[in-house]
Figure (cartoon, rainbow, N blue to C red):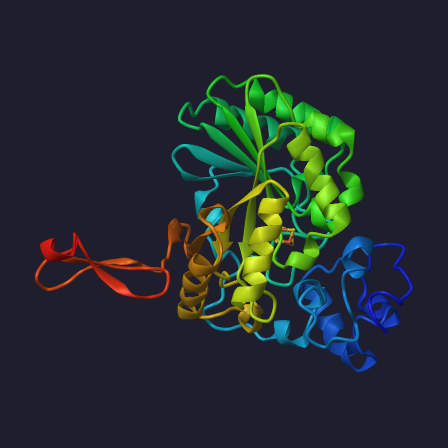
Length: 359
Ligand code: SF4
């Protein structure tokens, strides 16, 4: 059965038995997948199901969304809150890690549930629910009384699971706070459920007094389907700038050709590549993480293959809530004599400044 001749999935698949019925998992895996689903949410939208080739045991789209028995293995260094949201949460719904920006987590549901998600212990049906009216008011008060907050990042859960009406209210409330100048929305919906990106939703994201940015999460070039590209074009055509974020995932995008195609696809969609995250220490995700050295080698390869427009920052979220750091690779070094040595994109090393007889 190929992705093209398989019968289209009509509704979001949530139960392991539905995955088996639709050819996305073997029946023999059902008992293990039931155990996985009891702990971590599962959802595969029709749009994502259509991208999966079930005849490919290593399909890079399936690997991101179809649960696996490997998720039942949690390593001792894996953490329920790997990037330290909780220690940086002064009030419900707010994460204030850096002085000038704060996360506002309005919802705890997503269109799809990614198998590597660093908030997998917090998102999904049965986990924390959406912010109550009182909690939302308290979160707004926190932002209002912290004049250093220049940027509010809506994340979660996926904020674009909210209705256009609710999004319009939230954007209006935030933009009315004089020191909030930027509202950034992190979403997977243009990939996972592109039909949700209607003119109404796009219009709701524009609010007088603040600039809206949308950060699209995608990890494989096939996720930028025609429909996903059309959804992204709606933002760009409305004057909403976009950036990307991707996670480096073993067996999904950990080769230079795939990363190159992904970054080129973003730029073609008017999306500036922003972050390539090293996989977080989320529970049950070791099979999807690469090594840091592999990530650096891929970034080095990317530097030689695509222009600066296509280069994301390779970053590590330091466990415990210490924030993101760019993790290389490094091109500039100082030798024992104090001279600088800089590597070019082919790996050849040059003295800087060059010796006088070479200039
Ligand atoms: S859409 Fe984002 S928050 Fe939701 S499961 Fe995927 S990575 Fe996690």
